[in-house]
Image (cartoon, rainbow, N blue to C red; front, side, top):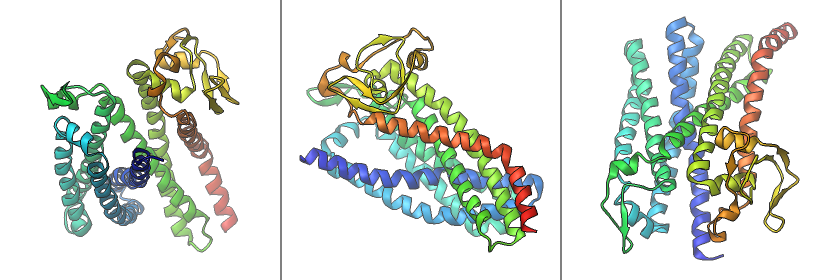
Length: 356
């Protein structure tokens, strides 16, 4: 393994840890805000307790996220110095603005944690809302730098140097709307189901009192409602991302679906293993015309295959498995939400009768 692959492994593993904490750090403040607003509207103390419990977890995760995020930033400079020297002249502005977003998040987080019981309820909601806005802004600004790498613009290269740089054109790149929207929606969806899992675990504990079980049930229903709602929105944003790939990065869409030959009526392939020798997906389930529909909104739409691009520019073929895994997990969560929303009241009523 050469030094480039080693650098990718190191950076990828670090980013893999960071994205978990960063996603929770974006979603939990939003959940706390919803709980605070629900408490203000209903006067139900259970929602205030939810907000306090989720905030305790968030304070720990925020510290870990800062540490892993700092490591990612350091590795960018150490592992990819020439790349950072080039793009630092073009897309540095989102990173600078992100510092102010983080300051806003940290400042109002301190107010909410240490002074929530000493300020009026409306200011308590305002403080945690600003925490959620700061966390979301941080994520969106960092995602914009990634979106720029997918659709670079706002500069010209002359002799390996960036000239005629226009930072705002670089920021407002074609990949920005779909990337930012999808990242934010999936963060809210993920945290909704994480807090639902915690509440479900609390319901299963026999040592809990009936009062605690009532609290956990409310937390479960609120979390499922938010997780399921944002899950559907995330699926819609994922469809938007697929259409963006079809228009701007067709080789990525082709590898995600294991499509080698450009064709109309392209099938959507679920599962299976991409075989470069056979130029097909072995063991996959093909849904006729569906890829053309998802990419072009037409059943007879033409979708480009990998063979239209030089072999050395192909993304790794195993990305098909990761893509199917991502879509499969999201679909399973939405199905779980749909099932539980309609069965939860009956199940809870039954559990209460058994408990008594």
